[in-house]
Length: 413
Image (tube, rainbow, N blue to C red; front, top):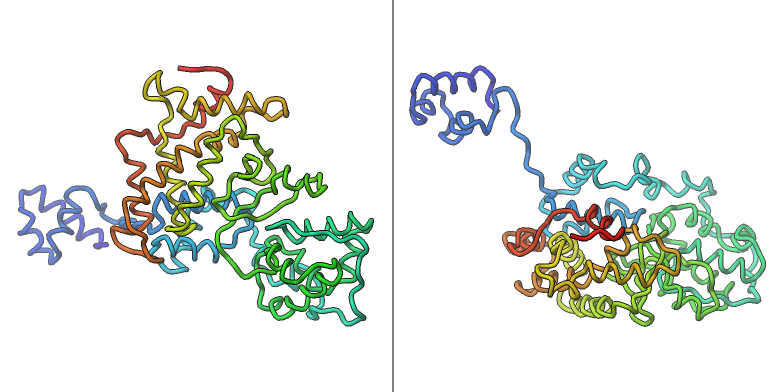
């Protein structure tokens, strides 16, 4: 930024009829700098804003990830956007995230960062992370874990099946579990907890008469995989087959939207599941998304899908296209699930109805480019190439949430 008096001198000389070259030679700055002040791209006394490295597609990706995984750590999110081509440092990403704070961070996360606190501070437990008493007992009722189940949920089901309280179950387990369950994100692996994780796993396996390998595979609390996941509840029909009637909170791969066995839309945490039997093409789209993972990463697929959602046409191109349009699918889903008492104004219906169109668009965009290595850069960067969807001439990019509500209430154009 030039000093105000020098910048104002450029404008004065230009007003007096001096050419750009003469002004640049007189002031001692480049022609481009002179043109920027003359053309109004720079204002005397004001520093030019720094271009944001967190592009709109990446910002949309962050928003979606923080919505689907409310306790996602910023460090994990940085690794994901870095794999998608984010060129800045970790500090730059945190600064950009802070600048968009109110836009990106859900209300429940504002002002808190408890998922990254020291475990001793959050739990008040002793630094000793393993119990110093006799061998953990064996409970009479064996409880199998659900794939992706949270540790709090599994311990609660163990207690319920054996007519105990969670406090009584924790009392016979290493204090590792008390510390872990006080953490909002049980996928976080604090350096003080890591050394005792193996011992804790074997103690829980002994208590529940299960195998350590089975528990480690099912419970993210013991895993080391930090691939993108979303917080939801397990398919209610899958859990009902195991005699479980209450919702089971789980972390599933971020692309996993549908239980393909039962045709159930797995909504975000706290929202009801949808029966998709009236729209089998949604289940077919889930199979297509699974196949895309043979060539692309979860981050690439998620970003392409998120961008494609904005490019899905809000209205059918012609009356003949109505039966194949997502609004027709939306009304079918609302009608079919009405008997379950689910509000038709939930965004869940829209997400499910758009899914086949969005996956088709995402697959088309990804297919135009060969598979890129992680941290790809330049014009082949995934977060750059997927932006082409938003500018596609055949699709509108406007937010259609208000139009969806109008359709849900029976209003059509």
